[in-house]
Image (tube, rainbow, N blue to C red; front, side):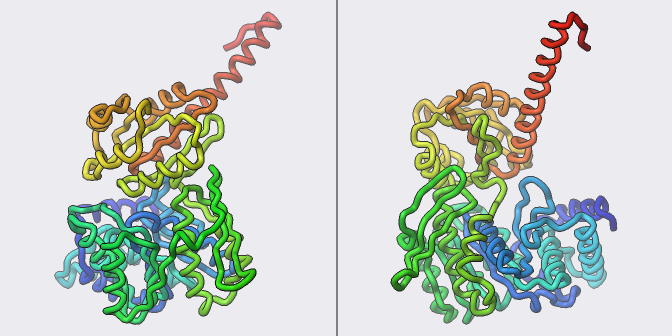
Length: 456
């Protein structure tokens, strides 16, 4: 298959729906030689922060000279972002080869009367096959949804099971209480394999501790109190990690902005403390350089300084609460003009309560997703909470309104579903191009008028 055919195959797998469980992915990987068993892996679960922690670990390990594969979903700006090698996306040609092999394995399964794997199972299999064929030193594998029954959980002996912040999300699949969700997330903890997590809410931490104890897995907790002298800026954060002895404090600068990234960085640092036994080229220097260079698109990403314009994929109440804290810390005196788009099955009422203040102005967008909440419905929900909101027919309209609304000292923030951020970025880029072309045309016309010439 070429790339177009590979993407058509992937699109066709949507008809097999989404299923939780490991039997199908195990059958598929068996047809591919169970290559996942030969790939050293860190398994990353949780609700918020998985991608950021993965980006930090990848940057540090790459800085240390290791070949690091990474599988993280969903993509935001280009599909190939889901498959990364030392931070760079897989090529379209290589991806086509991988999906050709996976497609053939799927055909063998259906010929035996077994169900065709789902889209995410196909993607997971392609990722493991790629890691194996590229002889990765380490693979960073992000859970798609949940943990225990996620296709990535066919990993049997992870070097580290890592759990970022756990909060309410995907309740229709994972459970209606935080404890139920935590039990599913904790399903990635394996017998005898170390577990790293951040400080969690009491009911979540109780589940993680209990599961780790049952699996005889050493539990390491990264707590915010381990960071000192924290400073937040639009470009990132800086802090020092308190060490155990005199002079052992580690100064850190983060390349990914957001107050919550300090917690994610501490989680990454605890993971690196475990990995250094197997990957000795990890040093203080590579840790500092990697964390400073780490990037993760669509996560409090600044796409412009004039006007100041950020994108962020906060799409649940906990993520929005942290986003609000970050903006209060970074821009305490600035007015924010908002663009918001969400999926209908998210707790957008909770997101609204966490994010907005009296006098805020929001332009709403319908995300390009079958589950996208109509802009009119989101605007109505905002207005019911006393927030000024204007529904927009497109991302282009929302960008135009936000740019026109924002004063010189104001900040624009587009947040919510990751699925619409690509359109916002593209439309802002087009808007700036039109502005530059318009300004240039004006200068040309002015010069022509002075010379008495006609312009076309």
